[in-house]
Length: 514
Image (cartoon, rainbow, N blue to C red; front, side, top):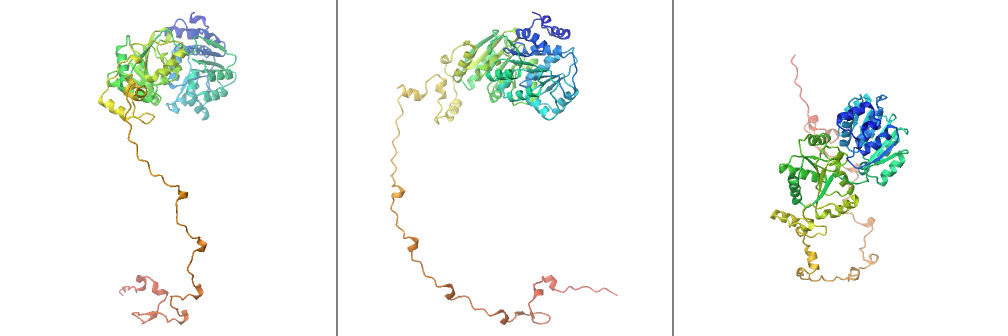
């Protein structure tokens, strides 16, 4: 099938031909005809199958008629991350080169002023993350009453990031008569409930089994010890990999992203980092450097695992086995896209065996080991610094960690003692028992006489007591106190005697000359 058979407009067909595409992917061939007729579409497809073009191309054909108004966009596309939103904007700019459409991008990390200017100018296509979109709406800067087409992309990722309440609120704000295009790689129960609530008789398009991996991806497991040995395994893997053009290294935690990135740079690898704590300019700079070939290795967290269309990624390395098996499908889907071949490696330690079993149960496939398995690994070589560091750490039970024994494949000392392989340590001498004290209630205490029966000294009535104070004469009989004065002789002390000294003394004024 060719793109010309799908019913797209001439402008869109010329843009697709200029991009170098001739035949549509299965999801595009099945979803585009339904989208052009205005019917709701529920698309279920694994990552890397061309879902972005499946809704971009029919939207461009339908937007050729009509005109946008200020603060009232015509179409709305919801994306879970900023990188995905920016990627969709690039797709509209590429396929809509011959259309005079205004495309607005509402994402975090960018100033409100520039985004508000685009909204006020009128947007034919509004691409947004849920949080920033609701922020604009609550400020009164945006109206959703003119939405004709609503696109919800990567719905399962929306669920993982906690955006489902925001999605439900947005779906209630847009008109009931809009067309909804809903795309997801998996269909958990919460997503199924959402589609039943907001999609009206949708055309279900499923081109691959949910949570399946592409057959063009070669998968393999690499056994390793933990700690510094794991980083050395990664470096050796990147050096020895065949046909390595570029690679994405995934870590479970943002802290590990920084550690692995620093380790690779220290050993001369051109590497960049990408995780959620980075500000938007730094994230876009790392992504652009990887796309342009300025760096060959991108160390990132799961923020980059969903939907990013980075062309020609030859290798994906899971430095940490993902704790959720669905994330494994999305991670390795960064390679082997659009029919290309790719390689995906996963480094496995003894702590990752449980996650490995869940991944293999999900994809219904057993992944081959490349090299020795965990039980066939040689014991690691430790320095005195490693031994001192291991002896300082403590396990959950409060004793010394037997990490070195576990990584060598040996049983911890507790297990060797239980199995009789090692003699137990000599028990300590028992402590002397403490003296047993009699209960407090039974101890002998001297009996005290009741307070009512105690002898108290008899005091004489107050009226009969002899007062020790001298008897004072009546005030009228007292002689007035006198003191010597310099001017008129003795005088009675009165109010004037309490005046300050500078007021009591006369002030001599120099007489004026006649």
